[in-house]
Image (cartoon, rainbow, N blue to C red; front, top):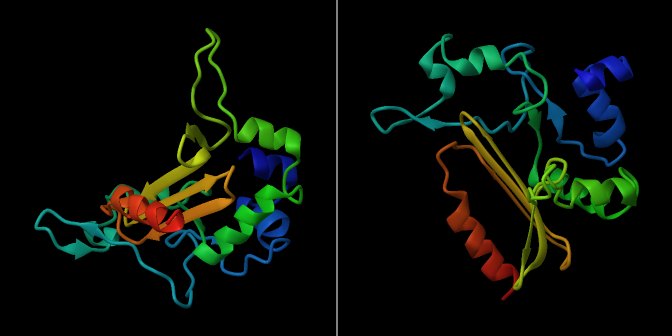
Amino acid sequence: MIIERTSGNTFGKFLSENIFQPLKMKNTFVYRSRFEPKEIKNYALGYVTDSLGHQVLPDSFGKEFYTYYLDGIAGDGTVNSTTGDLLKWDRALYGDKLIDSKDKELIFNSTKTNDGKETNYGFGWFVGNSKKYGKIVYHSDGSPGYSTYIERHLDNDKTIIILQNHSDAKINSFLQKVKAISYN
């Protein structure tokens, strides 16, 4: 809402003009499948497990299921991308094309509460340090049918991006295997 009111554009148009197009993220867009349906080539539908253990689309639960009324919200769960496009975004975060060093200081560092306790959270990123991997920032998300994860190893310039079209996916075990391969 803040982006739309200050820019005078929709959330999707603002992101497209200010992030996706400048970074040549050709497969990234805001999509609300029920609110503004359109055909998208090679779109990965998301699956959930029903009470019988079958893999089904969230829409199979009917219009009363919360994915229907959440579809009109622009933002959380409506930005669609690919690993390749997210890597372009990741690469841009190392430079100053999107945000400057002052903003990166806020985004990629833990803030403190009023009583001085570390939150291990920046603006949108969980923040941590590892003896093995150095400074790590990460963000995860999920919605019915999807699980997403991005982890940036800032000291080692490594990024892990996981996009899965099943909300019950076990990201952590996969993540540990990817780290092992990345660091030999």
